[in-house]
Length: 134
Image 1 (spheres, rainbow, N blue to C red):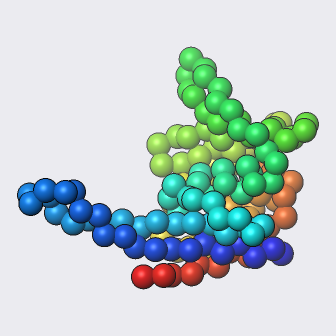
Image 2: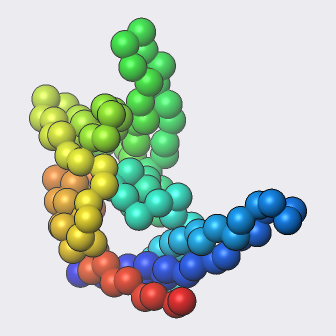
Image 3: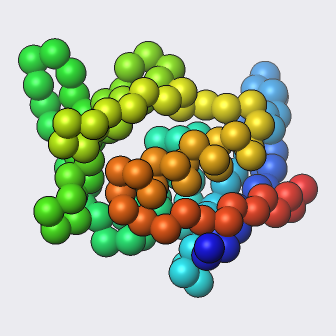
């Protein structure tokens, strides 16, 4: 299993005026294949998108009357990711799976992401590690 290090930093952002409070903001960066890739959030959608694109998948959006969703394609393999409130539906051919987008425990999040990577994207699972740099 390849190692994928997630670097977590905390930045304090000031609004710029006396009335604006200072806000704590978490920033996540995925270090994979010797390249740093920013993560929008530490959730299923962000991890899947970043890992899939790093492994040669192309992403495009499909617009439908009922829903808009992302499609990842690599050769003949095509995976649709349909957001549904706080969950995601992954579809490949006739198989589909519904998962939560957010998890309280990182280990549970990484287990779900690895399952999706192997089952839907035909990719090897990753050994995710979080490196806190406060």
